[in-house]
Length: 122
Figure 1 (tube, rainbow, N blue to C red):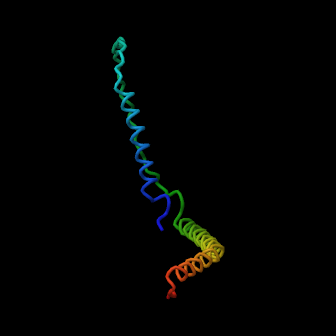
Figure 2 (figure 1 turned 90 degrees about the vertical axis):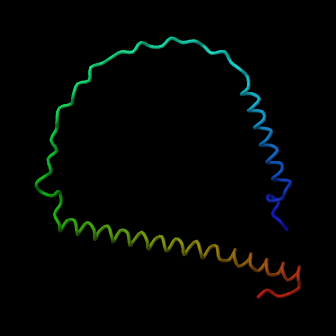
Figure 3 (figure 1 turned 135 degrees about the vertical axis):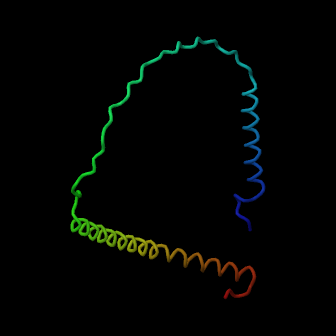
């Protein structure tokens, strides 16, 4: 049995409603309206002043040392590992909570199939 939302009657209703809405909007847009005349603003010229040159200087010493950089990478990796572990725990909790529903659904489908066709599902 097809899902009720996928039957032809439902899709036909949606299509007819869309056509009705489109015909209403196209009828409303065919009206002509009188243009209102406006005066154009006078163009004004302004003098563009060149910006002073700014030389970019590279700092002579690095902001953090190599040891601090390596330490920062290790800290970030530990945070990443912790977050991925917590994500795994959350996924496992979701799986454990949804598993009974999926088993119940499978049992229902198997019994409905057996009832309808009389042969066991492998």
